[in-house]
Amino acid sequence: MAPKLLLTGVTGYIGGDAFYALHKAHPELEYTLLVRSAERAKLVREQYPETASIKIVYPGGSSSDGSSLNDLLEDEASKADIIVHTAESADDVPSANAIVKGLKRGAANRSTENPAFWIHLCGTGLLQWYDSSHKRYGQPPLPSDKYDDVADIDKITSLPDEAHHRNVDKIVLAVTAELGGKAKTAIVSPATIYGTGRGPVNRKSMQVPDLARFTLQQGYAPVVGTGKVEWDNVHIFDVSALFVALVDAALDPARSADPEVFGPHGYFFATNATHVWGEVAAEVVAEAVRQGYLKEAVEKTVTFDEIPHKTLATNSKGIATRARKYLGWEPKGSSLSENIAKIVDVEAKHLGLKKVP
Image (tube, rainbow, N blue to C red; front, side):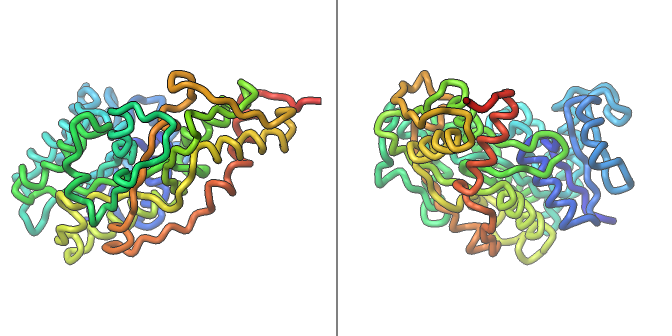
């Protein structure tokens, strides 16, 4: 019997692209796609008609028996060999608890040699915790801001509770011990993601498109403080390649038993290059001028409350050593700068802007 994989968030940007890559790499798996409504299920079926190997479930559907979304998630999680959770996963405590309940139910049919696997999507926003706590808005990173996901794994998995996403991380990280090794986890934590996705619904990221949209609407590029805030970045295709690599590992008895891959140490940053937000803002406004949507490239200092996306104000510096060392993951996508022109063009067209005379 083919292994069963449950995926949440297929209508989202990351989940949709991850499923595209997973289905292409592993068409032999039995997929259950959990969505929120019949309307979303219909959108997914347009790209992925239901077959013997693809099942779409949602509250109120024929297989849900009137269950709520998290009741349905718990039930499906209890039956899955592999769970890939991407639907608002980083901050949604109820869905994380539902998965834990499902894993506990399924543990009766599991052993330490045949565990279930939970691959959970987080984000490197948690690394902003120090700057956010001390209101270091618009400042360059401190030397202590950098976190290597191998060398600093104990620091990463014990960040203060005020760190973004930390409440859900704690739930995920506790699972292996809580279930006596009958379920194992890995956390995927991407930085700024860019690139056009390949999923059935949302194919657009947030941070840089939000910056581009703000710039086009307001006529200037927003810069916070010194403009020296740094983040790492990664192409969406490379994020999905990491999900595929982790599913590959879950299906491989030798690698699935490696505590550096699954378990409390299974924390994977997905980062490739580094950018400075002030420089990205300058690239965006210059591109808006080049494409004819603005007359001049104006940069303006703004406050924390005025910025289009709060991640522009505080640093996030994560070094993705673990995926390279233990999974052979190597990012191959085009750079963020190579994608700026398309991002500006897409946002301008979405806003219905006309080129300035």
